[in-house]
Length: 183
Image: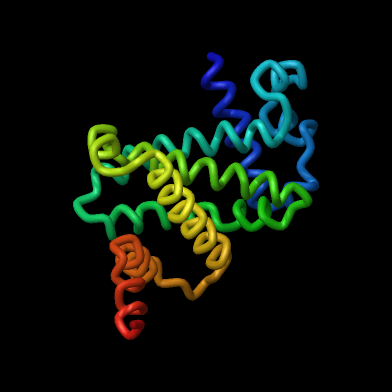
């Protein structure tokens, strides 16, 4: 029952976040939408940011499972970018709130955790030093968050094209071409 209640709270919050800015969503709104008591809410979550953090972890796990089944990295990026289509209104409301900095940090931690989950541990130990791995994870996490933030809410975005661009960026193709003319 506990996981079901948590999911009910998260669903109610995200339904509200589709139509209402984060700063205007109260715990009262969420519990009324769920038909639960404030005490039940506080049994599961500390506050609205805790709801967001928990849901990002859940989405991150689902996303990891789905992208690991992808046949190519471009397909994996396309699956990841599907968040833009599915949750663009919610992401826009979260980013435009007074809690923008906290939300961006939660997004960053979620994306970084996603990338960490994709890297096989045996490859990490034999290929990269820990500081190199940390730099790489930070670089790609910030890059993906930047792309998400830049493209959230755009109606004209071609997600297949953007997925291809992220794939080429991740493979270093753009950077290599950019450096070709340098001495």
